[in-house]
Image 1 (cartoon, rainbow, N blue to C red):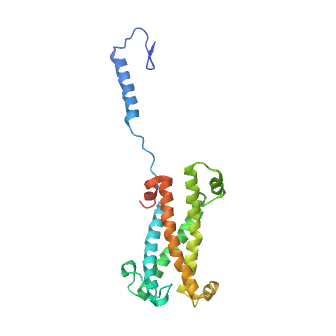
Image 2: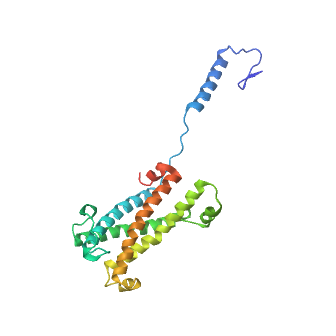
Image 3: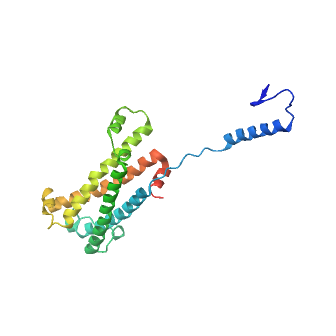
Length: 229
């Protein structure tokens, strides 16, 4: 005869303390397994990714607000009589001040992209961050909503690369037009160069919103917060 996996020899009885202790232990383990909530492992990012995101957020904020100060000095649309933005959204106080802030932040932003790009290549993180053939196939065939979210997340993450390069390329052309006149010529005119550079701003903002929303859908708020903390 057996009781809860404990053999009874016939000489022993259930009333003996030895078997009562074992029964209590089994009951405690059973109740603990039911009542104890299962906690999932929280996502954690490499310290390099956290540094990259923080520098990006700060430098992009400075470039955006100082860029609006530059815009106010000579609006892209409508000339000097065109739409002006309230000073609360600008940084620098005047044209020269806005340019100083803008180009200083540009160097931080550019160097941040450079070192992180090298880090991604060396550590081979690009295999998990950027779009691949399997992601394109997933959009066509996958029924799993989670898999589709991952695919769109990688597509958006990859799409920002040419947008950032375009912003930097046009920004350099505006920063040093005498040294790089061929950049201005590539876009046909100085005004066209300004319009393309200005257009990169809403694209970067849209990317940040979509990137954040897809990240939340893929891993919840914990995934988003793990990119910074």
